[in-house]
Length: 350
Image 1 (cartoon, rainbow, N blue to C red):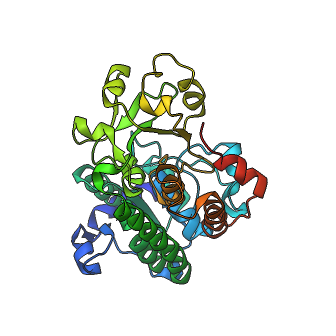
Image 2: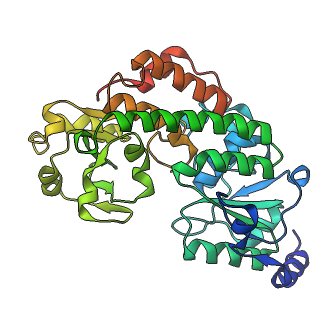
């Protein structure tokens, strides 16, 4: 874009009709739309969407992959092999959400998106950031709730806005079925009898999520008790080995292969109940994490995996898990996973 065009766009931006969170009320009770700034084009006119953060990019890649402009984060070659061809080769284009934006307003305007979409935790900071982008660029911005319980409604609502309502409905039905399965599993196990779970993130396994963290949702929905909830509410936090020994979790889950390999042989972790019982499980992470990374719709298949790991046999066993995972990859990612490759990825205890 020529400089004078950019300046003209920036000049008219403040005069946009901004529609803050009231859009949620307009959309009706139960809507996942937290805020809409600017005038959203009709569904048939939306051809290019900029994903402000990782959860938004995963949502777009499964709902309307042909409309996703690019990835807001680096997607490894190993991960791209598990994606549909239409999004496999998309470039990294930067992000607006998370720990610092990496896409400038000028770069945004040069990409000519019809809409900017963000998904995830909604608070004053995110609302303010999206409003500022809309004011400065003149581009319509949509902020959508991203909790796991929101996924069925989120898939339907964003699907309608992007003109892919039928696909949104199919994905939402799979999400609803999975969440209902998790609810049945929880109901069959009294709260006090549910396994105490530690989620170890990073190579040393010493990062985890507090009570209320979006990163811990899959574990809680699958009927696990987050041991770190005893330390209060919040997001991700670093903990000490002494703290984990005090919590003494019955199950450890992780997405980090290095940590999974080392924890069973590490004398420091040997006294932990989960290590003594060898209930340490490595969750798959391709193309995206089954537990988080990012905390988006990619976690739905992780809930299915967690039910089997936390409550063995309550969801039909390993064969049913394999079938569910294959269905998820076919339906959400548009790819047919190789049976042996999928089995190796799902695996068993670390």
